Image (cartoon, rainbow over all chains, first blue to last red; front, side, top):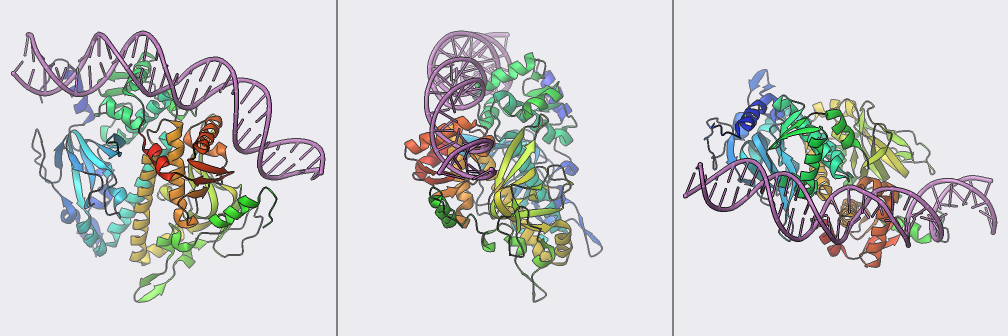
Length: 266
Length: 266
DNA sequence: GTTTAAACTTGATATAGATCAATCTTAGTA
DNA sequence: TACTAAGATTGATCTATATCAAGTTTAAAC
């Protein structure tokens, strides 16, 4: 891991935030169905049967673990292609996109370590968005077919999946509530920063700083703002002492005020 | 059902759209866990054990069915109160609200017949929003406690719940995708009309007209627009021949154009 | 049928954010 | 270290939507 002059801080923070390391399994949403379960008084680790590894793509440092798939700036899967697996992000970040008829790519979600990708299409034929790795990222892959055959044998596994799905449903609803009907750029960005920090809290160990990893362009696209507007709001927040910006790393200096802004209803 | 002079059309359409009738079970999201299941070669209708009825509240025409709870302009449950049941809307519509510190009530969702309420908090202590009946509405109630005890006995029931939750997760994600990052009032309203029509399609039997049931105020609140702005966009859409307005009933005359507007990315 | 309140619409003005354009910064490469 | 391209910021102007205000329609109550 080289340290350029200007980059030094960045790397330090990335290490501090653990963004280039894989998430601990106990902090991962997938954990509910990966954990060994008790069946007939025996302990079974069914994950061995359905958790796949994939060939690393464009990996700078080849992944040595068995579980994690390395992808860099690569498409994990494309919209409207057959659904075969669901994924949990292990490291890095993935953007979820849909492409409109005119070819415009709209960012409809971001997934950070420990979060699921594709589980919302579990009983559909096809994926409902494309998933694209930002920078160097990795995932765990769960084959639906293999999981199903395991699930039939172990009822407890199914209960765990129920809990996982319900939790996801909650996460999605919370997400929706955070952003629906927000009109001002200020409250949108505040809601976004609070939302992402919270989602990464268990993983990064910090409730006041986050590494966005994605470009300003992607954030602006996701929020429905112009990159110029987003830039201005970022600058304003920093000038007002609400945040401190170090490239893609954001320190939330006055979280209370940001929360007020995020909840502000106009 | 009386027919006033000006009201006649309205009532006719409401009947045509079936808004004052309860949804057929086969069109309801809850159906996956209400249907009788096969267990040990026997058919069990477990719904009898966990599907409750509730005392009608403010009902104009008392409900004679066993399953459906009648509530009118009433709170079904309040934010941050203990979660005991999940619900499926049988008739009418419910608005989901969160109240901010300053007392402002934000509409974070609308639930039409066949849709679930509260399932996203299934494994939480408390409900994460309040649910309020608009006009005369009714629900089916599933007691969590009773469902759980049934579920343990019948694995198939659990599989059905998995399917239900995954589908809900998909619905939520689709919802999110429809509204996140939409900036213009035009595309917001277009997305809203398409979204609600689609959600009600199986129930109303129509893919080109819908009965909003909720006030313009609630719609504007949900979309993050001012009622004046919403009113102007409604008027513009009608003037342009995209829709026809009959009070709360909206006819989608040019669905293709509305879809284009809804997908429009600026 | 008349009265009253609530819901909805329309008009005029002010403002937040888009747009267009230029500049600056960062990261990757020679 | 210098060069290059992509990403990010800043400035000036224009436009869509909020805001304030008045008026109209609808629905409920008397």
